[in-house]
Length: 105
Image (cartoon, rainbow, N blue to C red; front, top):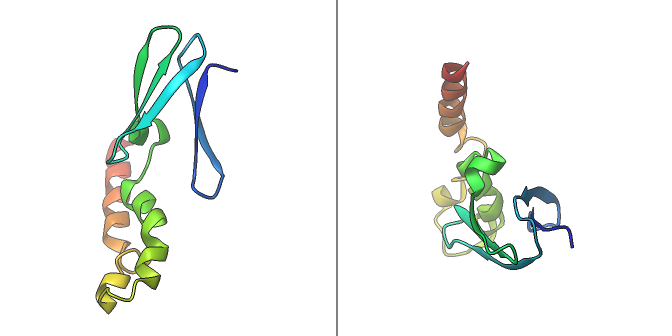
């Protein structure tokens, strides 16, 4: 064991490794809103990892990654709802992120 917590995408692609424990990991939990991962170890520490901060996530893009297939295949949705995560539907959030990035520079 390497005393780390690893996070993967649904398709098996590794996202990151959380390092901070000095002993074997004994438990991991993911918050229902996907914001935090909690890990507990034999080093008697509980660490709350802020996933968005650690991964530098664009939450809208990340959420759409998980919803795209559902939006495409669900027969109950209206046609306009299917475009929620399309490139056209995400133009404004992307522009907002670009403006925020420019302000940080």
